[in-house]
Image 1: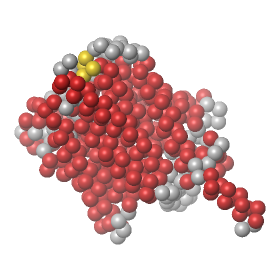
Image 2: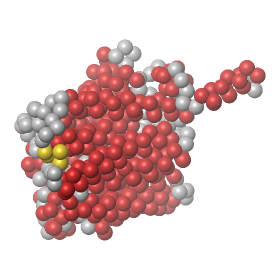
Image 3: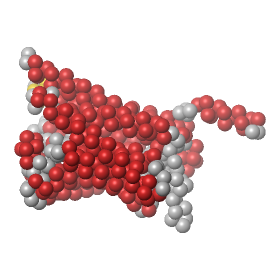
Image 4: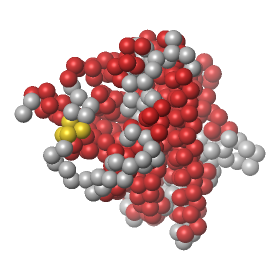
Amino acid sequence: MDEIFLLNNVWIIICFTLVLLMQGGFILLEAGSTRMKNAGHVAGKTIFTVGIASIVFWAVGYGFIYGEGNAFIGLSDFFYGDFESQVDGLAGSVDFIFQLAFAAIALTIAFGGFAERAKLSAYIIFAVLFSALIYPIVAHWIWGGGWLSELGKQDFAGSTVVHLTGAMAALAATIILKPRIGKYNKDGSSNDLAGHNQVYTALGVLILWVGWFGFNGGSTLGAEGAFFGYVAITTHLAAAAGAVAAMFIVSLMTGKADIPTMLNGALAGLVAITASTAFVAPWAAVIIGIIAGLIVHFSMIFFDKAKIDDPIFALSVHGVAGVWGTLSTGFFATVELAEMNGGSPGLFYGGGLGQLGVQALGVTASGIFAFVMAFIILKIMDKVIPGGIRVTEEEEIVGLDLSEHGSYGYPENIKADDKSKQTGA
């Protein structure tokens, strides 16, 4: 067997492992960004929804994306089990498992809009429907030979396919579920329902940062030529620039170096560079990261003033930064890298408005489709599920750890509370 073929497959399996490990980053990020009474719930639902996404992707998701079909959807390769085929110089099974990890990440992003107020049953049902009917269709349009792919849409590792799709589903969820109890006052002002552990949040961001080298680097679909090293450079520079820019702007605007904003700046830089990492020069990666770090700060403020309660900041980090990242290739894609990776050069490299227009069309069509589909699905679920998709007021106040799972993420705290009640302390 060819050594390069083996090397490429080993590299992609390593990248799959890194992308799967990103779920651990999301667990810490989301648990740390929410209140203690919901920490166990956040961690547990991530595991079983990854399981659901994996089974659905195996059954129909991969086929809807990469199967033979039409410009809208694939229609073959369901219940995948091919151990002999090769895809893009990889064993088909290796390509399958790598793509599966991306589908699971998109679902986890979508669930940011459910945080601290959705029933467990809502997670289960939506996980199946999102993994079957929303993510695969957008992915087919751009990665599976669909109509946006035919137009030359550039999205190297998924600023649109993964991040924007997940964020628009999260937006639909936040609108239907409505804000958490106590988030907004009658006069329109907002209360800070701060997450319980900034150390968890910071560690989660670092794990995601590391995992992103598999996310973007693995999208080279091989180790031959070591182009993944270049992708790693642009990925890292954008994340670094995003963190610094976010810290700078929040310090300038508020007088305090707010930690969540700084962390979200790093993530916004990573999300933004995901589309353009293989198309842009390192200096452009820094600019892309800086702009992402700046816009994530103002986006967080905007959504809060609009009374859209987004505890994990999925809309700002994955949605707004995802749009910017996708558009950035239309500005910064170099002639040489565009020729190497498909597509046309950006506006600043003599490509005119053509590629930028395709990128704008891609984010508009994909974003609207993901939002409308998610909104319809969730609205139907809200009518069909007894009592709707949101937990009761009492259950929300108690916390989802106890109301949905019957156990507390921090059981020693419950024992301390019980003891204090018994003693009257």
